[in-house]
Every structure is written in structure tokens, then in C-alpha cells.
Length: 283
Image (spheres, one colour):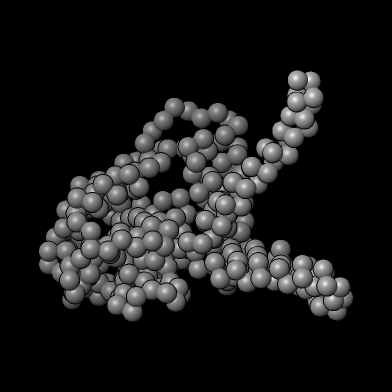
């Protein structure tokens, strides 16, 4: 019995460390697999495997070249995965223990009514629902609106003869903040050729930020929901309502005051994300 306890006392720490590392590695692989940076991860793993092979086979020249490449890998990863790292840090900052739920409730009924009318009239639209990460740095152009959300205003902005109907609308805390926005398009090569510009912009925006995008097809009137680069097409209004109630309103209900410890951790995470954005954002 004493020997068994001695073995357990020796092995429990390595087992916990292996288990924790396995969870972290799995989560990172799962996170990056949903982003457009996944091929870079695969290439990095191939490079790592080649380095191990050259070390085992004693190929000194190739090993030196690969080791030199790895010397710059840390900076390269920060630059190549800047959007993904920023979104990852934002998701960590949005965990229940870190988040401060102080944003006002959006008027979901008005938004759903507007989407229903846009779909019925087959009026093309793309609406971005901003959460933690600001959409403004990812928007190439846009007109500041800062107006209360209303069905009539959304219909006017997306009306076919309106000068701003081709762009997207940004909603934050139940208000329309920007219109006529050009969102970044996704560069994923495995998408269906039938996807239009609005759907590709919805995927691209949600890949770069933690926003939610709702798209109304101009050809069919179909409604699509996009989050984290995953697009759900031709969903009924009831399903959209359920998705928005569980996704958009998360982190917007008031809670009890937080511990100062969690407040400092949350602010630290957001400061790191902001530093990534300001340092590595292309000019």
C-alpha cells in the first residue's frame, strides 16, 4: 500500500500536466482549424517534422537551415495569426468569470421583424452584430449613423435605389452605428462557388472578429446566420430568433459586481488583444 501511494505521489503531477497540455493543444487545434490560418498550421507542423527527421538522420546543413527558420517562427506566428490570436484572446476575455455584462439589451424583436420584411421583399442585406471586438478596424469604408434600431431605417438603408444599399450595417447594443460598410471577404478556397459577395463578406468578417452576421439573399430571400466563419444558410426565422437569443444576448445581461481580481485579469487580456491589433495591423 505504501508503495502504491509512493507511485501515485510521483506520477500525479506529470499526469495532470499531460492532461492539461492535451486540453490546451486540442483547443488550439480546434480553434485554428476553423480559421483561414489552418493551412499555415499544417505547414508549420510539416516543417517541425522535417526538422526532427534531419536531426535523427544527422543532416547538419538542413538541420541548421530549419533551426534558423524556427528562430523567426515566434514573430512570424504573431504576424500571420494576428486576427486569430486577437479573437482567441477576446474569447478568453468573454469567459463568464472574466466578462462584465453591462451592455444594454438589444431590441431583438425589431431586428427580426426587419429581417422578415427584407426576406419577404427579397431585399439583399448583410447585418453585423458587434460583440467584444470592434468591427470598425475591419471595415474598409462606411458611414457613421448612430441611430436607434428600427424596421423602417433598415429597410431604407437596404432599399435597392439607396446609395448605401450595397454595403453592410453594423449594430452595437441595439443601435445602428455604421452603414454602407465594406466587410473583408474570406479567402477560404473550399467554399461553394454559388456563394455571393454578401455571404463571403459575412464569413470573412466573422473570421476576423467575434461578431455575428445575418445575411438576406437578394435572389431567393433566404436568411443566413454566420458566426466564427461558420455559415448556416436558408434557416427559418424561428431558428434565427433562437440563435440570436442564445448568441447575441450572451454577455449582455446584468450580473452581480465582479471580484477586482477577475476585473484585472479581464482588462489584462483585452490590453494584450489591443496591443496585438495596434502593433501588427497593416497600415
